[in-house]
Amino acid sequence: MDRRLTPMTGGVALRSLAGRVTDARFVDGEAGAICQPLVDLCAAPGGARDRQVLLGDAVTVVDRTDAHVFVQMAKDGYCGWVAADAIGPPVAATHWVAAPASHLYSGPKVQARERAALPMGARLAVLGQTGSFAETAFGFVPAVHLRPLGQTADDPVQVAETFLNAPYLWGGNSHAGVDCSGLVQLAFHACGRACPGDSDLQQQIGQPLPHDAPLVRGDLLFWKGHVAMVVDAQRLIHANGHSMSVAYEGIRACIDRVVEQGGGPVTARRRP
Image 1 (cartoon, rainbow, N blue to C red):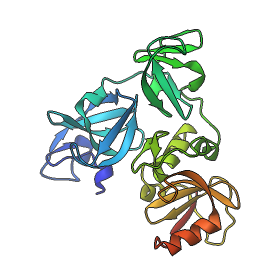
Image 2 (tube, one colour):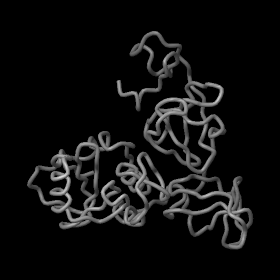
Image 3 (tube, helix red, strand yellow):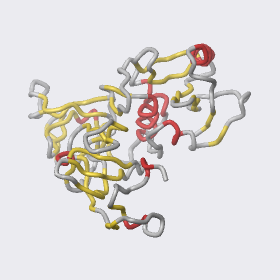
């Protein structure tokens, strides 16, 4: 079983795995939510980052240590360890951050001191509004940066384009730093479409395309360990380690460059 999608630590597993695994203590899990703006989801307590998760993301808590909590994410099934203080009670969110990035402010005015940066996709319960600012339990957010839950974007490519020039970060899921699969997931989630977190998992969504099929906007191109989104017949957009940023690149030029650098050919083309 893929450890990224299996809600089990060494000795504890969600009850849904009963009959599929042995030598585990089964638990029902505890509902919770991410209570910090941007949190590393790690393969081991305090270990390497697999992905990042966002304020308001719903989780099921499976296991705990003194300083870390093992969770499964509701939005994509991804499992991993987060810092214990990053988990709070479930949130009855009403809005999500639809801008590429925003801030939590200490007061409802542009001159107020910011408390934290907010990534696209963060989910918040809006308690009221003062002027042009929405009030939340964490602070004030420019209302123009929020959309009600259920009100989504229409075009994943257009969402990805709002991240142009954002820096590349392995496992990143925000405008402060994003990797190839993080960009695709952010773009699809902003459009209300399910999407897993890593490129090998994303290679299973949608329909396969023949190698010679014309590419259209929104198609996905895959290499070993990498994914890019087609912008038009000539260009793609991707978060990449070559420019260390989110950038446009010519499709043919990108394919040739990756081969020349030893990354191999395109392994799959998918139409989500």
